[in-house]
Image 1 (cartoon, rainbow, N blue to C red):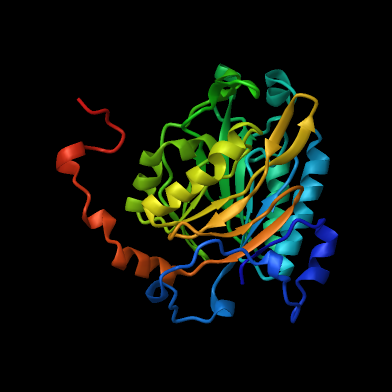
Image 2: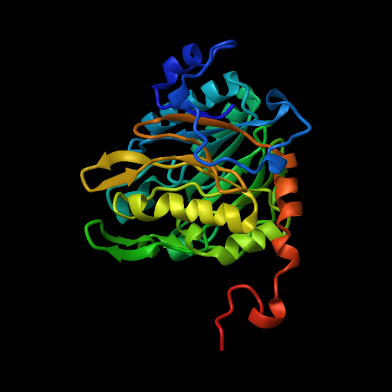
Length: 328
């Protein structure tokens, strides 16, 4: 089942109860796969279901948690094994000082609430960009943009600190200086086995660096996830193009939960959360407003893709050297 939902959370169950058929406009398949690649040994209902949550975070952490918890609860009720939340799911502040004030350590109250939520719902959670006070907080007075993966027991099984910080000046969008309040991470996180497949963790601006996605794919990733808060200018131009490119070149599913709408008087996000399959097809997406989109992950299709197009066997490191190194 492929589809998108952008209704408020309390309306979702009535839309997707057992036996309900999604209207044609809710089934998104913009490209046809080759017939040989569309074959699967499993029926669609046997494939793992993932949920992608789209929200509009504000500086109000309590209200943000309530919104996210409602979406996670609906995802669990609909049978999803893993729910993805966007970057800054915890809050989006008005300025760097407020960002630092609202941040918490990983063992703080907010992460404990999400751990409890995962346990009670029996669902894995990709928490795509937590404002983390690290152990060096007292020395640096800066935080990390930390992607946390919780299992269905509420345990932290992986954490990735964003390595590429978004320090940019886009005409019409305003300057962004993530490094004013945030320290860059120093390592990548090996892909983690989940009920949906092996997940490689990244965050937003990381999608502009194909070396990262290729490194994760070479390490065994089957799903790449880019939780984001994309701007309203770069979003229409680059969002879908970059996500589909990362899926095609890495031959992975790409899952991108996104912030949407106006967060406060000086910040807005593009939205359009989506799931892209290894063929580059957008198989599910949200449009405007908070909500969920759902997709099933077909790892048999992924393996067929890699068999028919064995690009990783054809790579020529003898010509272009290690990933990320500039040409001489």
